[in-house]
Each structure stands twice: as C-alpha cells, then as structure tokens.
Amino acid sequence: MKRSLFLVLSILCACKDSPRGEMEPLPRPAGYQEPAPQPEVKRPPEPVDPSKVLLRWKLAVDSPLALQLEGTPEKGAASAPAPAKKKGKGAKTAPEPGPSSSTALNIVYVLQQPETGDLRLRVIPEGGTPDLGTVSERGFVLDGLDSTTRTLAALMMELPRDRVGPGDKWALGADLVDTAPLGPGFATKKSHLRNSVKLTALTPEGDEQVATLEYDLHESIDGVLTPPQGPSRVHPHGHGKSPLAKKKAEENHDHEHEEETPSGTARDVSTTVTVTGRGEFLVKAGRWRSWQGSLSAKTEGYSPKVPTSATSQVPEGKYALRLTPLDAVPAGLKLEALK
Image (cartoon, rainbow, N blue to C red):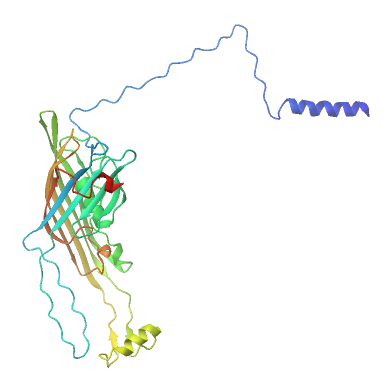
C-alpha cells in the first residue's frame, strides 16, 4: 500500500515539473557553433521617373487657402417654370412664370491644414448654408458635405493618387448623376459615362513647375419611371382621413365635388451632365493658379421636391466656370472660425 502511494506521488510530481506535451531540446553535437546572424537586406528605393510629378495640396498650419468658384449662366440656359398650383372654385389663377435665367454660382472654398489630421474644407455658397468636410492631401473628400457640394468640391479639389506625367489620365471619384431618388420604380434603358482628367503638359517656370490639366466628364442616364399604380380618392369632407385632415377639408368650401387624383403612368426620365475644363496647378506651391471650364446639367421628366432629391449632382443649367485663388481669406472665415 505504501509502495503504491509512493508511485502515485512520484507521477504527480513529475507532471508538475514537466508540462504535458513539452518536448526536450535535442543535445547539440560536439563542436557545434551557432550560425552568424544574417544582415537585413535593404531593398533599393524604386527609381523616381523625373518626367512625373506628385500633385498634392501643400498648406502650412495657420495659413488657410481661399478659392472662389464663379459660375456665369450661358446663353440659352433656362430653368423650368414652376408647376401651376390647383386653385379652388372662384379663385383667380396666377399666370405661369416663363423661363428665367439660371442663378449664377458664387462659392468660396477655404482649405485649411490643422495641427493634426486631415485637411479641412469649408464651402460657403452665396445665399446658402455653409458646409464643412475633411479632405486628404490630394483633395479627395473623406467626410462631410452634401451630394451637390461634394461633387463640385471633387471637381475643384481632387488630384491624382499616383505620380503623373504628360499624357497620363485618371478618373475623379465623383458621380455626376444619381438615380437613387427616383426609387425602385425607375428602370434604366441606356447610360453613358466618360470620366477623364489628363495631364497635358509640365512647364518649368523658374523654380516652379506648372502642370496643365484638362477635364472631360460626361454622364447621362435615360430610363422609364413607373410610379405606384392605383388612384387615391379624396372626399371633400375628409372621409377616411385623420381628424386634422377632416377639419381642414371641412373648412375648405372651394371643394364642392369629390376629386380623384389620377394614377401614375410610366414616363421617360433622363439626366445629362457634362463638365469640361482646363486648369494650371503649381506643383511646388501645391495649389491652383487658375481653372476655367463649363458645366451643363439637364433633367427631363422629373422635378425634385427638394434639392437633395435631384438626380443631377451639380446645379441644373449651363454655366461658364472660373476658379480663382483669393489673396486673403474673407473676414469671418479665417482659421479661428474653422476650429
């Protein structure tokens, strides 16, 4: 009995000393020497093609850059007349307004390099609400900005990802047309896309290099929009409506007969956007010297109720565009206003 207990205790002690599954190292042969450590092999840097340049925005901290985009309506540019509203019985019908010229564009961009993090871009449209977003050092919009503001910012700010030389082409990360607002009832019949920016020349000017960029973008989508089927009947006294709707219907004495809104019928919808331009970018300074171009956007068969539900991701109409650097950041838009 004592001998069996001794054997059990010996086995338990051996298990504690040597973890289960542990392997003992093999003994080295006599005269064995450890191999000398191999030096780390450093790969030579990839050769830089002197004919190519890296286009990047270059701003110092506390030194924001302001650019102004002006869009002048071209001849023949017109906005569609507002649809006539239904009037009650006996009410005078106002004449429908005729086509009016597209509103001129006037947008100020303020690009700023904070102490840490990505570049900050503030967009201030004349008569509109300022918007704020972040962009990378090549001008790619990372965060913020609504759809139209983002698309225009991409056209003005985005630079190529890689080094480029004369003849090189690349695409911008922006959609000119978005059919999502049309909903699932829209079916595309045909579409066309052209998204190309080309570096046409690199011209030395003293210590500076001027990169000439040419823009050629076009997107068009044609299709059929089929609204949900089925008429909805509206009773003048509000039967089938909420109490508030009933009260409003009873207070409206102009509606004496039951009205029926016609069911939606399929209709053709198309949106076409074209952007062309030519700009001169200062490679060493890291900013535009000038940018000029044209923009054309037209939608047929669909009128958005709010700008955010438009299919065109740029303002409708025809514009001559001009982007110019400002000598100073406008008052109220300096660095302290962007913190």
